Length: 209
Image (cartoon, rainbow, N blue to C red; front, top):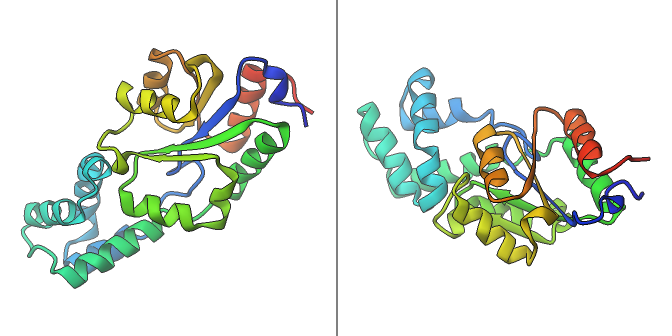
């Protein structure tokens, strides 16, 4: 129960979404088929444009550029809406092991938040999910036009939390995001598994139960 409370100055544990709280999407082949693009061609284009989409939240721009690069027609409005729905749902499956870590942190008295590179539509979906009530604040890049690992989004997070950098721990699967948080003075755990993250949080924040 006192696992994180004994940390002293550390008050906030901030979780990333994709590949941390939520499992990696398995619906890229479905998106590719709807666009009329071979999945092997679609996937690298999808991830190459993802940072821009997470920043500007414009699906017409994201999927339009992707399709144009692949040499297929730009999606019509009805298809675009379907692509957004499938894409967001594909990133919405909870990882039970990580949620157990979240529940442990909550029981300990830590304040919890989310900081995610995600378009605004994904933010809307997450806010409506029952599990999101475990988090006092949910910050999405697409709502603010800035993405991790920019220092600006970490400053925005700290302003939202009304916390100092040294009071905050980021749990994120990307090394560049972890380093970005550390550069402004935050603690950070490079997530590779829920068990590994639990061990690192214990090491950083104090012995657990």
